[in-house]
Image (cartoon, rainbow over all chains, first blue to last red):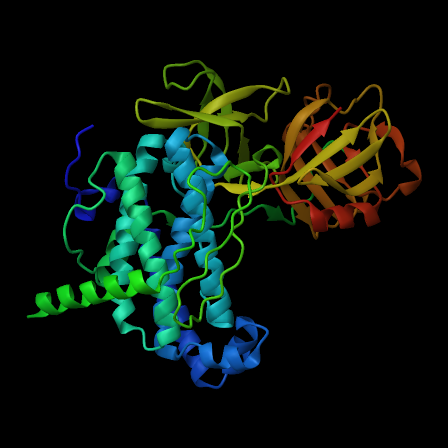
Length: 237
Length: 262
C-alpha cells in the first residue's frame, strides 16, 4: 500500500452518520460541565477532593478549577468515545493480527485515561453516554479508517486545549496523554498505510470543530432500550 | 504571527514533553493478550494524574453481547438479502418491551456487516443473519444462567463463577421446558398477578407444545404463589422459583444473559 498524506477532514466520518445524536450529547456534556462549574463554585470542592484521592493535601492542591474542569470534561468525552470504540472492537474479536493488537493495547490506554479523568473530576465528571458504532468495530477496514480519524482528532484536540490549562500539574498530565495519543495516531496511520507523520508541524483543532467532526459520526446514542415493563406476564406459567 | 507562535509553542511543548516523559515504557513491544501490563509514571513534573496498572479485558469466552432491535427486520439464513427468510425479528416483544438479540458472530459482505443471532421462533434453536444496521448499541455482560432439568436447579454464573443457586420447578411431562441455549429478553415487575410472583424474566424460548398460547407461548422465569411445588415438574414450561429466589436473581441477572437449559 502506498503511503500518502492523510488529513482528518478527508476521512469521511459522515459516512457513518445516521441519526445525529452526537451533537445532542455534546450539548448535554456542556450543560453538565456548566453544572459542574456551579457545583464547584458553590463550594462543592470538598466532594471533588474526596473523589480525587486519599491524601487530602495532595487532592486539595490538584482539585481542578472550574476553568480546568470544563477542559477536563471535554477531554473525558473524547476519551469515553475512544475507550468504548477500542473496547468494543477488542471484545467482538473481528480484528486480527497487528490491527487486533493495536486495538487491544490502545484500548487499555484509553480506559486508563478515562479512569484518570474521572478520578480527577470526581462528581463533576460527565456521565458516559451509550455508543453505537454501527458495525464499524466489527469491520476491519472501517475500524482502521475510524481509528485513524479518532487518533488524529484526539491529538489535535489536546493540542488546542493544553495551552489553556491553568494548573501546572494538570498540564503535566495532559501533555503525557497528548504524546501517547500522538503515538497511537502514528501506530494506526502506519497500519492504515498512511505516513505516520505527514507534516513537520501539527495544527490544533478548536473544540467546536472537534464537536462537529464527532457529531458527524453519530456514534453516540441517547436512546436506551426499554427492557423493563409492568405488563402482566404472558408466559406459559 | 499566530502561526509562528503556534510553531514555537509546539516546539517548546515537544521538547518539554520529551524531557519530562519517563523513559520507562508502559508496555512491552509485543505483549500477549491477557498478560498483565504496567502503567507508566507520567512525567518528572508533579502531575495531578495518578496512574495505575493497565487492565486488559477479561476472558472473552465468558462475555455475551446483545443489542436492541431498532426496527422490525427479516433474518436471513445466510448473510445476504437474497438468502431465504429464517424468521422475522420484531422491534417489540409481546411484553411491550424493546426486543433484543444476542450475537455470536458477524461477517462483512460487500461492505455491510451481518450479525448471526438466535431467533425467537419455533423450532427452538433456529438461527439467522441480521444486517447490523437493524440493531442498536452493543452491551456486554458476563453472566450466564444454567437450568439443570435433572437436578431441578438454577445456577447463575458471572465470569465463570457461580454467584446464585436455587431449586426450581420446570415443565410437566405434557408441557416440557425446552432444552437449548436461549437468552433473557426483558424483565417484568410491578404487575398484579401473584401466580408469577413479584418478578418475571422473559426469554426467547418457546413451548414446543403450547403453540396456541396467547402471545406465542414464550417460556418465562418467574416467582410463584405456590412455593410448596418447588422443586418439581409441574409447570406449563416456565421455570418457577420461590419469590425470595427470583427477587435475588433480579438483583444479579441483567437482560441479555444467556440461559442454558439442559
